[in-house]
Image (cartoon, rainbow, N blue to C red; front, side, top):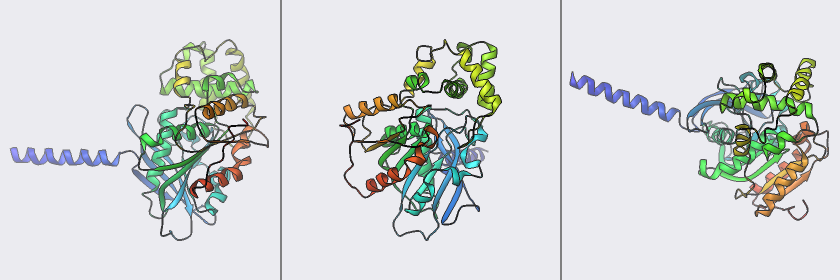
Amino acid sequence: MRAVRTIAAALSLMLSHGQALAQSAGSLSAAEPVAAAPAGMQAWRVRYWTTSDRGAPIEVTGMVIAPRNARPATPRPVLAWAHGTSGVVERCAPSLHEKFFAWTPGLNEAIRRGYVVVAPDYPGLGTSMPHPYLGGADTAHSVLDAIRSARAIPGAGAGARFAVWGESQGGHAALWTGQLARAYAPELHLLGVAAAAPPTDLVENLRGGGNPTVRAFLTAFVAYSWSRHFDAPLSTLGNRTTQGVITRLARNNCLQPGAKLRLGTMLGAVSLRSALKNVDLGHLQPWARLARENSPAARPYGVPLLIAQNPKDMIVAPDVTRSFARRMCGNGARLRYIAITGKGHETSATDSAGATLDWIDARFARAAAPSDCGRI
């Protein structure tokens, strides 16, 4: 009997050890080939493991895209794409949408240039856990572990050298990825961070922006997400009616490039704008603390940085972005700053894609990084 118990204990230990290995950060759970990938591309919808801001293993989703030509003798360079705001609930994951390939800025050109593009959905998009919208550590971990997991797909041929590029929410994710890469994933080699219209000082971003109705709508995303992920009480923002509007706006809306908000959504955002007119998240706790804790640090990350910002952006205030860039420069960062011309916030990455990819190419070519710090 003692021998049986010993064998059972050993088997239990082996199984738990195997489970721990399977759930280790960056391990690949599944890679499903995408039959509808455009010509010249091969793609996989992936599930992989990452680590939450509290150190817990969590399973997340994303997409990996590589050139369809034969795997080269040396590993391919990796471009991590961090998407902009798509929503804060499970069904809003970009990888789930049939137009993923058309909606990912610069994808065709990046593949043509030979990159493996790794596109995480972020925690809670594509899976049932709460999504930490603009949560710095959670999102950065999911980006870095997406790169790790992509290296386990033989056909992708992904190497350890990578750059990260993001837009809007993804610009925030890119900055946090740069901030945490060296400590969290030291085996990966980050060469550059590019951010288009990134939220930086979240307190000022929640206060600023030229369109107060859209700002109220995005505040609903922040409030709903942080109430679920960080346990911030919605009751501090208003009565049950206000809390209901926040919840409905967050649960019922996934954002799509080029699509206008529905009339009912706009009416809800206008209502919320009125209800929150005397609420300053920059002073109200725990919201102010959470906003500051999840703002990227304005200090060098050890690699060159590119920031692209449309001076006519009505959602991410250009003055806030410029102030962040100046602080980065003052702290010794080597920073390229692009003033985008185009429609506005929603096309920030598309409008700056050519210049950004050229800049990323130069990082892989080990060219000296330009700096605009003297003229921002």
